[in-house]
Image (tube, rainbow, N blue to C red; front, side, top):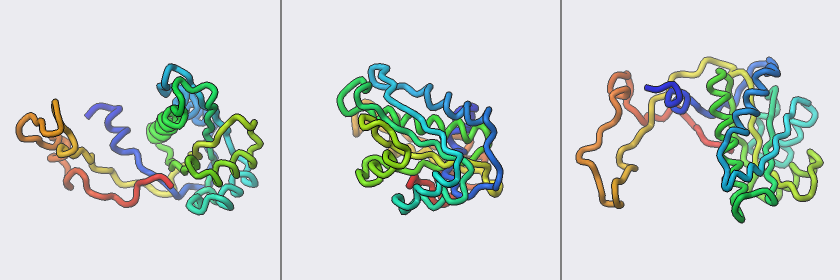
Length: 201
């Protein structure tokens, strides 16, 4: 398995963290990864707000009911979009989603834990985060990444490749019998096994 695929497979949503700050070098690597994202027409319509002040971070659960993880989280990165810079009308949320994913993958590569807390498209959450962080009126809230050192060692995750989701040439097309990767056969559990909840809030 390639190094990048290993990072993709092992990335999971982490919601419990050690009481330990995330170093500035790691913070910068997360931000650089976010800005490496592709965007429609190379518009790069994103902005990042780094949050380390506990008084600010713990305000977010007041309007985001599924963000309790922030109550004991050392670092949060709020991601915003600037629609005026989008490369195609309505594309800024897509561009920001890719930037968010890049940060989550970089966190995994750094042995950090992270979870994506959705703000967009909930207008109430969007307006509340924009007001909390005092962003200009033309900037829209997209999401928050909660980041930290995992509170416990996480089990290895099985690759969840599902050949039945792949079609060739047309919806009915195939390349004969599809098989799961050999890496799956070499592991003690089959690919696709649930390790627990792994969604963003």
